[in-house]
Length: 348
Image (cartoon, rainbow, N blue to C red; front, side, top):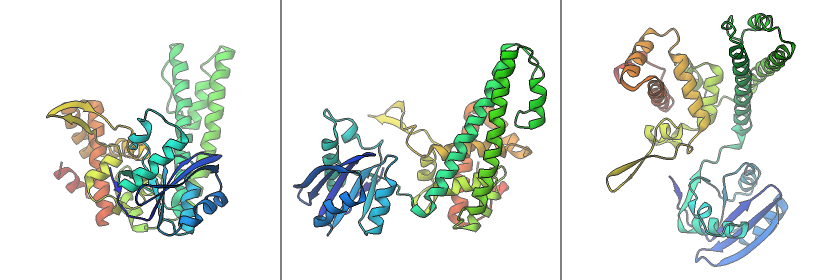
């Protein structure tokens, strides 16, 4: 957890919503100078903060509407701090919780140096990152349809599917095995939507590969040297990481990728794990996917995975491999080197 420790003349905490925002400004001594509810608009924000612009810092709790105010602060050269929503316990654990109280707490936490920071993603790369996330959403929806067809097939105890439903010619064979018109219609609906997703995902991937701004082409090529990581997966990792230098240690990186389980410990006793939702879920998916693809047509990786399964079990073995790949990617991006299979396994 990182706290903002900067010293300023004025500290502004904003409880931000779609239509309204509650703004609280305190001075360096904690005295409230402004505490007001106002419309969520650039004009209202600039008018309210105009008298305090000298030495002002603005803090907002991370939620989906923070983009515009971060860009507005950058345009007017106002320091902007994004708060980590899961770490701000002073708000979520309070006895009384409303917009007025929350905005005051944000300002006071900022002044006290206890404001937990989240990463303010650069606006130049933000739209492409969100587009990659949308692609992942559609891909998961397509997978749900695939699984539903498999369930219907199992409900009627029919033979296994002729092949993966991701291949279109296999879908034609699937339709022919159902005789009940209602069941057939159910399957046809799923397959029709899968066809639509296939077309849209192909167009989206082409658009991303064509228009995405690759700020470090060498990093892309380095990631492509890892078996199992293709261009879309490499772009996903790069756009979610953005700047590898913001992770001073490899432990910080794998923690951000949700590849470790933080322990709860007190008085020398371990009480289990916590913080599973703190970190980047998209990077966790990316490295899980990379670990699965890493095993394909890779005898050395399969042998290593077999040893892990014997020691940890099937589920944890894949998690260990994903963690190891995460560490490897960190050093690849940090040192700007290509993947070395021998070094990867020798350091195991």
